[in-house]
Amino acid sequence: MSTDSPDLQHPPLGEVAKLPEAVAGRKNLLQLVELRWIAVAGQLATILVVQFLLDVPLPLREMLTLLAVLALFNLASRLRTRLPLPIDNLELFGGLLVDVAVLTGQLYYAGGISNPFIFLYLLQVAVASVLLRPVFIWAVVGCTSLGFIALTRWNLPLALPGLGGPTLSPQYVGGLLVCFMLNALLLVVFIGRIGRNLRQRDASLARLRQRAVEEEHIVRMGLLASGAAHELGTPLATLSVILGDWARMAPFAAEPDLREDLEEMQRQIERCKAIVGGILMSSGKTRAEAPVETPLRTFLQSLVEDWRRTRPGAVLLFERLELPDVAIISDESLKQMVDNVLDNAHEAAPDAPVRLQAGCVEDALVLTVQDRGPGFDTQTLDRIGTPYQSSKGKPGRGLGLFLAFNVARTLGGGITARNRPEGGAEVSITLPLPALTRDTRTQDGR
Image (cartoon, rainbow, N blue to C red):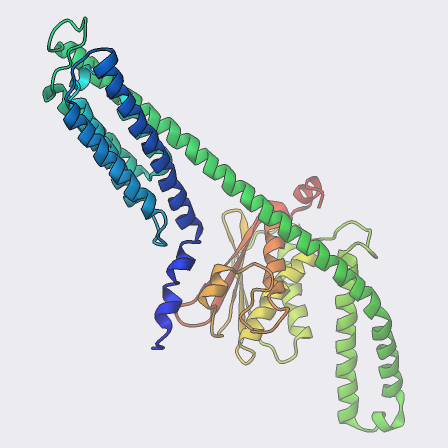
């Protein structure tokens, strides 16, 4: 094993601190620090007002000691935010437990549940609902509930005017507990739902932004491709004429090997012209007629035969499973999408056959392409379908699967890729059959 592999597996702490999760954890801890300073100031002001203005005796030494402990802990938390180590939910949960413990101690010295500030526990629940994962949220609810229950039994009475007695009735205590639990439950449920909805909205916006960037990229590539195809038309036609003239010349006609090479060159020129024509037709420059309806089985068989004919030396094994007898719209983009995946499989293992399997799962067409190449590396699998993401190590590659992904997504389907346990890669194209029929694609404007 290489000596520098740990660095590849564990990035430097400085880099870890810049990850989105680490940045969010640091910001959340800073929020807790700011909120705790407000709590320290508020508790200090309340203690002084109650003791000196309302003339209610309090155990000042004990309560101020707890307040000093909370302030020191908050100072340590502020210093902690400067360290490059990541801050996770467990650390935030520990900080909230310290807040709950200090609040419980203050309430113990100030009348327990008879203190009107008993419902400050709900503030801890609300903060936990925003910052923590569900398991830690319910742990905070449990801790605050235990503190509430403990204060009903153990506390130093608060001599408030008009309290009506040193103890509260069991019915009153039970009512307070039910009210507290109900408020805590509602806070957790509704704040959790709001947070989940906001996260889903952010994720949807991120996907839409990514799709807009990809579609803009496709438009640019389409413009470049159509322009290149238009420019290539003339030289290809010239080459075709020259090859035709050579084929009729005596020196070439008398040599079977040369004549065979000329015929092969002519076929490849025709293939190039067909590709150029397909690009121009897809961009709408030369075709205005309605799309052609073709039976699904005929379309697949024609696709396989064309691929075999235009890739001399390549072996394609076609396995057709049960397919419905339906007619689909066979346009150039659909054929090119499958051709791109087949080409990638052939390039991964040029000397091995490529396998194409066509079948239906529920109401979707599933095309599975398998090769016997080295498979995808982890980085390629994580970013498959993004432009210029290729395992071939050549600049400008990786557009085939990117375009295939976008065609499949436009049709309401998708593409998945994996490495097979026995070796090689497998790419599966899933397309809903209703999206391939005339009625659906006409209504969608495609």
